[in-house]
Length: 347
Ligand SMILES: Nc1ncnc2c1ncn2[C@@H]1O[C@H](COP(=O)(O)OP(=O)(O)O)[C@@H](O)[C@H]1O
Ligand SMILES: [Mg+2]
Image 1 (spheres, rainbow, N blue to C red):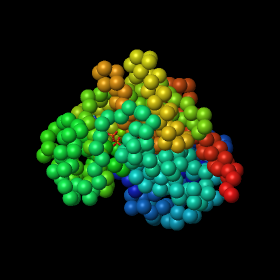
Image 2: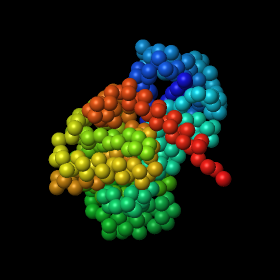
Image 3: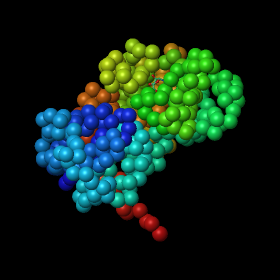
Image 4: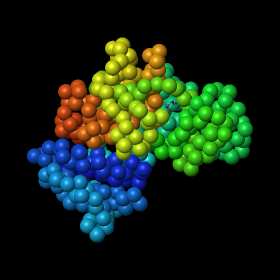
């Protein structure tokens, strides 16, 4: 069988995708699979690289260019007996667009489907859906571009009427802390909203809270399993792209040093949210935990980081599922979901 490893992508998380992909390429069971590399450049060009029959020994293998690889059209990846592994983070990869393409060409793929990917990528939509089933979340205000253009004073009044400073301002549809800022005053709020609108047409303003950050791994289709929570221990003001991926200013504490009933609560909320958003395959569910042990769901990441030092694979390792077996299970879940879908009655 063949795995089509899709990596890179038109998103701010391009580099982390390459790191995740390289780690996965070390872990595939090459006795059963050949792995076709397909790299999506930052500009969105699709390049078909080598077909691997063993783990690459250097990351350079993944750095394809139009000189070293063949430019292909998206439909060219169609193949019998292959499963696509989209190792793409953020917009254009984790947001339902790639998933929709793969549905259209009828190929099995790892990870959540179109609706869940799109919904989980959108911070406003996630909040709306999860609010409906009573998942605790921090208070927020959603702002559409038209409202901001027409009536900034009205937006300020609404934010200040429902929230207190500090507030967190985020584009609805990004990842990796891109376009996110914290505001302590109205002036900062204005700058932050302007900045966030450079990335999306909808912006969310959230109540800022002082909290620890707890994450739970979720895995499965119909039978959903969760991990013990892990904690992101920070020593920067807020967990931004630099500290997350580059400076290594965070430490992962696995399992998180929190009371057992809070652990159970987080796992239960993660599972409920996963099901409500129609997730399948995998997700990492992120929470805030306040000093008085109040849990708020922050977000679900449907394609979490997958380097050997990333939270998601480490949480599963803690549960006794080693990296290679985790990857294998994700492939099997993809095949099962695809097979099931073929069998649904369509008339
Ligand atoms: N409401 C909030 N209160 C306090 N800190 C927050 C809040 N929202 C976000 N943060 C901080 O900003 C980081 C990035 O925000 P997040 O919503 O997780 O965006 P991303 O999709 O980029 O991961 C969080 O991990 C947290 O450290
Ligand atoms: Mg986050």
